[in-house]
Image 1 (tube, one colour):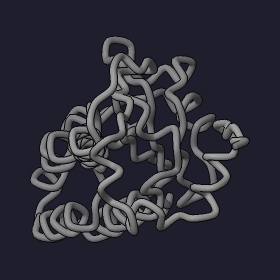
Image 2 (cartoon, rainbow, N blue to C red):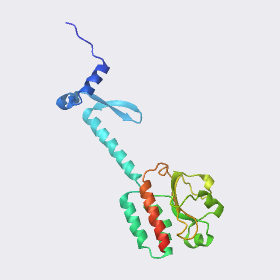
Image 3 (cartoon, helix red, strand yellow):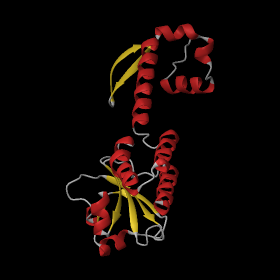
Image 4 (cartoon, helix red, strand yellow):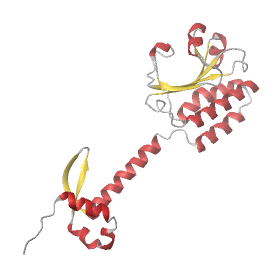
Length: 211
């Protein structure tokens, strides 16, 4: 009796054509081995059950990792907005902005950048010479999210890897002012959470008009 040798490609093609094969024949799984990935290498093989458990653990770790970097959530923005609206004085508002918000969003810096030396001194804002600020300032309400550029000359001691910079409407306080979000990681290099950051920036801008 002649037998036809089946190669790996034929097995793969069969499984792809029959995606429910293991659902219909689950007992086969207990006799199969599955690879365990550690980094980029498959170090050993385990049973299907252990393989499933291992993959679930990896998925859980990935979810936790993503959640850790999901710094701007709707819930957090909502909480921050309520706290901002509750501030009645400039002192309380600026203190919340540059002292509490960075910790709340796990950022290195959240603050306003101004060329007004007195205002910067009174409210612990970031001072930047007018000519340097003008180079950064874009059209009002423009939000830039990118890697931090040392040529900006904003920080010398703090290590900022990425930033979001919002150009505040000049009519708020009769001068060009920037809202700066700075992080030690790359979270601002992508445009993830752009809409939420823009919304928060607009709330801060509106509060500046009121106080």
